Amino acid sequence: MHRHDGHDACWTDAGDMLARAEATCRERGLQFTPLRREVLEAVAGSGKAQGAYDIAERLSAPGKRVAPVSVYRALDFLMEQGLVHRIASRNAFIPCAHEHAPGEGVIFLICRSCGAVDEASSADVEGGLGRTLERAGFTPTRSILEVEGDCGLCRGQGGAP
Image (cartoon, rainbow, N blue to C red; front, top):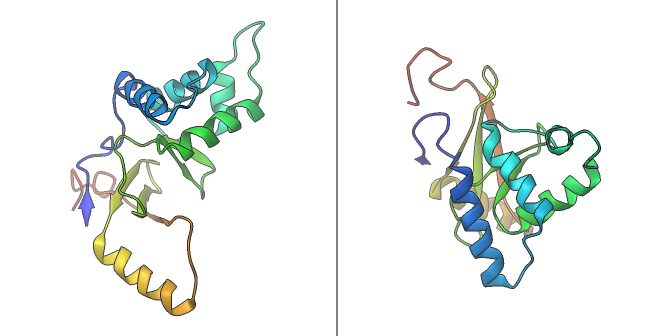
């Protein structure tokens, strides 16, 4: 299993995320609107998974209210471009600091104690899931697995096993 070291492995510098987003949109002929930029900055700069309402609150200022529906639209766009992930069990979003291969599944390791989210991938898990889906005659559009437990730091081991 590929696993990043430490809690913050999937977080990256907001500037790096913005540069990647700009390049991605330019290559694909898409608009990287000011709101999409602000939402990505908020997700990349938070250091934790957060919901759309939290993001809307963070972006709102006196006299400038950002509607959660607008944030959801921006998040949908950012997910389609592979720049953020949605943690379904938390209805929260995290930045994706690296590009995934086409069809590559994602495994989220969610610590129930501290709330940290680590991102991993596994050829063994992908292979087993692929065989199961094939036997069932099921064609997925994407594959995301969430595993909840306790990270190594919260278990007092000082890091991931």
